[in-house]
Image 1 (cartoon, one colour):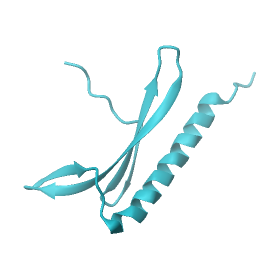
Image 2 (cartoon, rainbow, N blue to C red; image 1 turned 30 degrees about the vertical axis):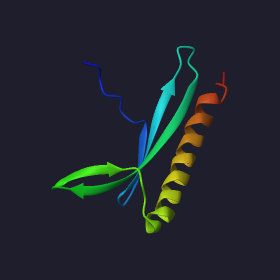
Image 3 (cartoon, rainbow, N blue to C red; image 1 turned 180 degrees about the vertical axis):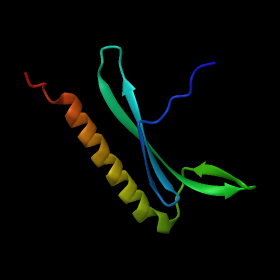
Image 4 (cartoon, helix red, strand yellow; image 1 turned 120 degrees about the vertical axis):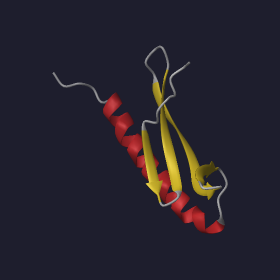
Length: 84
């Protein structure tokens, strides 16, 4: 069985989660994707939804902004030339 891919990072604000995924080509090109979800309880267990209520939207915006900052810092570190 294939190993489940783990996220590079997660931003959690209450029940809103922005999950950042690292992707890489065989040529070592790197990029990130972000999925956003809302956690809710269903039959005693936690589940994810990809739809949001009106009052979730400011939190979604903040989580996405924080994900953007995290990715920007990581990509900057990856593309900076190494010092001798």
